[in-house]
Amino acid sequence: MASRRRGKPEAGEPPAERVIAADGAPEEERYDRVFRPTTLDEFVGQEKHKANLKVWVGAARQRGEPLDHLLLCGPPGLGKTTLAHILAREMGVALHLTSGPAVEHKGVLTGVLTRLSRSDLLFVDEIHRLSATVEEALYPAIEDFRIDVMMGEGAYAESIPLELQPFTLVGATTRAGMLTKPLFERFGVVIRLDYYPVEDLERIIARSARLLGVACEAEGARALAERSRGTPRIANRLLRRVRDVAEVEGEGRIDAGVVEATCRRLEVDASGLDEMDRRLLRVIIEHYDGGPVGVETLAAALAEPRDTLEDVYEPYLLQQGYLARTPRGRVATRKAFEHLGLPEVRGTRQGSLF
Image (cartoon, rainbow, N blue to C red; front, side):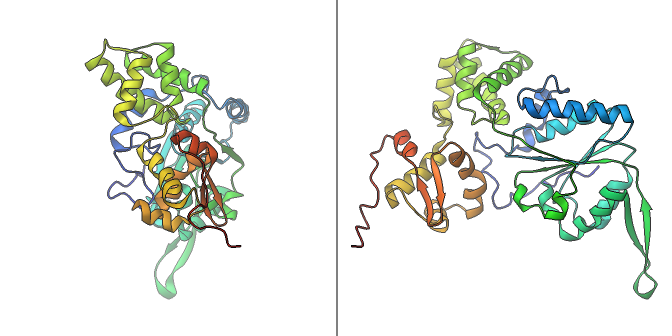
């Protein structure tokens, strides 16, 4: 089983200290195992997708066939890896985990595929980062369960087809638009996960609190859910920090007051925005009169790489309506002015062209 590579963060990855970052840190893996549901019935939220998956899993088991190849799309922290674990358990097969960057060449791919047993699930995280050579070699594997292996060198080189056990490829990506069309079209099922409503996050937080053995009042769960940016991973991360404050400075019980105190320490406001989110909006409003401002200019003003702005900071602000992308650049919306308590004044520094 191939493992993910650890090391220096790449461009576009969130800072490790950002508590509301949706990307998982290595030290959080043990908590993920504690919080992770094991069946579709335990999985909270995404009801439409759950209902469909129950039908497809049931049909595949009745026929004794592997599940169709599945692509899971959506922002980080919404449950793509968790769903892969659940599907393997529901199908009664093994789950093999790897990631796009870890499959560096065709030899690594061949080693991963030849270890699969019949109907096993191969989960490839960040599948859009597969190299073109590896992707080309993957096509016959997922269509005909065959991979061509080159034997010999030079004029004596020979391509030998190697038969594989029928398996299910489960791909996960945070950037579905970067998948090539040939790869995208080879998935029989495409599931796009959405941000969770506050009600579902409340249920997730209540369940996680029980697993941690900490008492959590309904008001505390609600306050925490409202600050979790629609993402279960962020909700569970904030819950652990709230538990620390409740145990050290409180009575060991999570209520709305403890949540407020913890979020003040973490500089997370009532809408789930942290200091970097507010700084980004303030730069657009105060330095550029609300925009439009080009992303390169904005990246220079914030001393952050462009990829980090586009992949880490902007998605939630765009989804919640604090920020807009236009052909001329980024624009702060009226909601952003209201959230920061600033008067909505635009274009006063440039003046009129006429």
